[in-house]
Length: 172
Image (cartoon, rainbow, N blue to C red):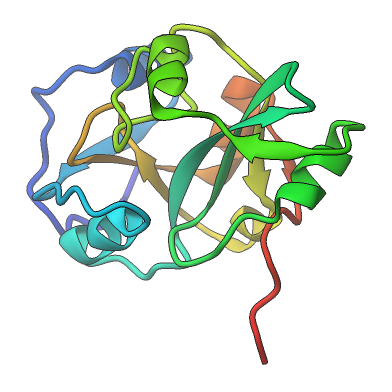
């Protein structure tokens, strides 16, 4: 598989994400970058750190719908999630971000390192529909400062993800 090598390759690092992808026969590359803890901008730092366009790098957000269902939503790092769209997608009325402690306990990942692949507890995954226009998706690799690059179709298939418009429209 030919993925661009724009950052240091971290082929020796194993995470629950890399183990999950390997177990599912998914081809991927792992890239590392200098993690910066900057709430709301971690994904932007990741895109800059690996030198990849922000439309191709997705952040992973844990969401609770109607205080009863948890879902994992992945959107481009420079976009904002539309919580009403996410709730409606699952037949709910309200959605809110899951608190950091609860997200970490549920997934087994630290905030800033949450991945839709290899979480301790598998929950429904939604990828923003813009993923369908990409040749390569870059998304958290299961640790702070790690990104996996893989084919969007493989990402969708291995977690049975749904694709939908789940972002706030760009102001224009």
